[in-house]
Amino acid sequence: MQHDNAIEVKNIKKKYKVYYDKGSSLKEKVLFQNRNKYEDRWVLKGISFNVKKSEAIGIIGNNGCGKSTILKLLTRIIYPNEGEIEIKGRVSSLLELGAGFHPDMSGRENIYINASIFGLTRKEIDMRMHDIVAFSELEEFLDNPVRTYSSGMYMRLAFSVAINVDAEVLLIDEILAVGDISFQAKCFAKLKEIKANGTTIVIVSHSMGQIEQICDRVIWIEDGVIKEEGIPKFVDELYTATMENRRLEKLEEEYLRNIDTKNAEINETYEENENLNINNIVTSKDRVDLPSFYYSPQAIRTGNKNVVFTDFKLLDEGKNVKVIFETGKSIIFEMHYKSIKPKLRGTFSVEIFRDDGVYCFGTNTYIEYGIIIDIKESGFIAMHIKNNCLLPGKYLVHIGIHNESAETYDYICNIVEMQIESKKNSGFGICRIENFWSIDNEIINGDIIN
View 1 (cartoon, rainbow, N blue to C red):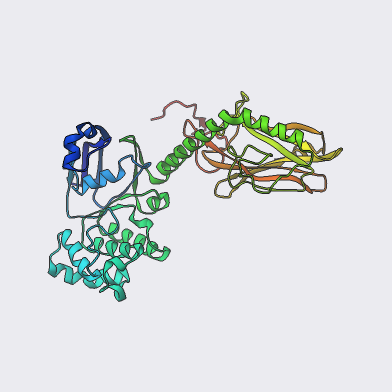
View 2: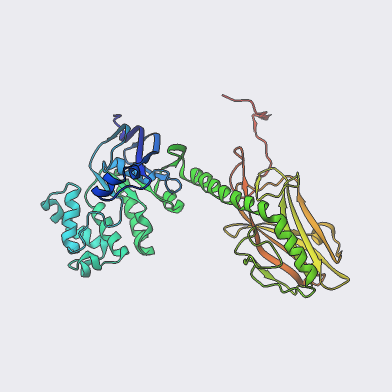
C-alpha cells in the first residue's frame, strides 16, 4: 500500500444471488425445490480507486448501481467475490440510520454500545461523552429509550458518536439527508473540521450540493463500473445532465407514440366546439388544448383566449420532434394557433429560462421585424435558431401571443422542458461565446502545443 493512501480498492467485483421464489421453511425447500432457483447478479464489475489521506471523495450514481455496496465492502460488513481492499487506520461508518442502536436502551447506553463497536474502551468513551452529548444537543432526552426518538434525533446521536471516535477513515451513506437545516449546517462544518484535521472521508449521496461542499473528488458509478471520476462540479453536472437526458428521452418516446392520435383528438374537439373551455393549468390528459403528456407539469396559462395555442413542437433542422438538442445545432419552435375572433392582430413571443430561473433569452416578432402580424383564423408560426449557443443544462420555454397594446391573448409559462447537451467540451455558464486564442500574436490553429 502506498504511503500517502488511506484506502486502496483494487478491481473489486461483487455479486448477489437473486432468488425467483425462495422457500421460507424447510418443508417448502424440500417439497418445492424448483422454487430455489436463482440468478447471479453482478453489482460491481471491477472497481478500482485510491483515496489519499485527508481526502474527501463522493460516490454518486443511480439507485442500484452499487454505491452502498462499496461502503459495506469498505467496512467489511460484506466481502468481495474478487479483488482486494486495503484500509489504513480506524474506520467509523454511518451506513444506516440507527444501526447498532438497541431501541429499548437509553441514548446514553447506546452511546457506550455504539462507540465500543468502533473500538473505543469504556475509559475512552467516558472522556468523549461530554463532546458526543453536546454535539447531538439531546441532553434532555439522553436517558429516554431511543425507540421514542424521531428519525432526526436518531441521526443526531449516530452522527455525534461516529465523529467523536477519532476515526482516521469516516464512511457516510446518505445519512446527512436527515435532520433540520441548522443541524445539517453544523454537520457540514464538523466534517470540514475533521477533514482539516486529517480524517479521510467517503460519502455516498444523491445530493450534489452536499458532494460539492465537502468532497475533493467524485466517482460516478454506473452499471457496476466507474463511468467518470474527477472534480465534483464537473462530474456532478455531467451526471445530472445524463440523468435528465434519459428522463426526457422517455418523454420524447412517449410523445412520438401518441402524438398522431392525440392531435387527431384535439383537432376533432376544436371542430366540434366553437367556444373553447381552456383551463389555466396545462396538466390533465383530458384537456382539449394541448397534449399534456409532452408538456411540463408546471405549465401555467393566462390570457383572454381571443387567440389560443392549439399545439407546440420543438423540432430539429430535419423537422424531427425532439426535446434534447446539442449546443451549436438548430432548434425550431413551432407554434400552432386558432383565432376565436376575426381580424385580430398581434405579436408572437418565445422566452427561454434555465431551470434555476435565469432568464437566458426572449424575443418576439415585433422586436425582430418591427411589424404587427395579421392573425388568420388558424395557422402556425415558427421561430428558428440556426446555431443555438446554449450550454448543457435543462431549460424551460415560455410562448405568448399579444396584441399591439401588449394585452395578452394567450401565454403559456413553462410549456416544455428541453435539454441541451454537448458532444465535446463547450465551456461553462449559460451560453457559448465564440472566441479564439493566440500565443505571441500567433493564432492557435488546433494543433497540439507542447
